[in-house]
Length: 181
Image (cartoon, rainbow, N blue to C red):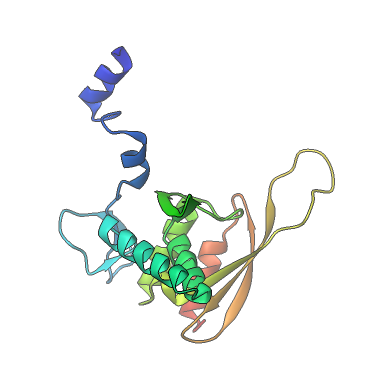
């Protein structure tokens, strides 16, 4: 009770788990500079989906699944994944939360990826990401590492990037886009 009271003073612990996991962060990109910021107005370029946009895509995915259009349902799931939305299908219903469904890419890297894409006039949906994770570690405790391949759907170009904790794949991705990737 004391912790919750103190959290209330700071504006923390005031929502339930589901609301917290689905909270919109208002992270936006300033189109002219590519800088991230938090604003009180609707930005020209947003790198997040709001709750209505997420529910709209989940409903479209459910309709595609019902119509047995599994390629479209998978496309929508993959698009949501790029926006940091994890879908969990349980008992015929799709629940969602914000996070990373990737093994090699954390949530912060996904935000950086979307920001760099927006800087060059793309949305996350303009790309496909495939992970290449080694099957098993060579020995003992290890850091998950591998490669990610990013395919630009507009240019039809793709490139592989080394992905491991602390890697600079997002910077390399930005350089690749600047060069016409």
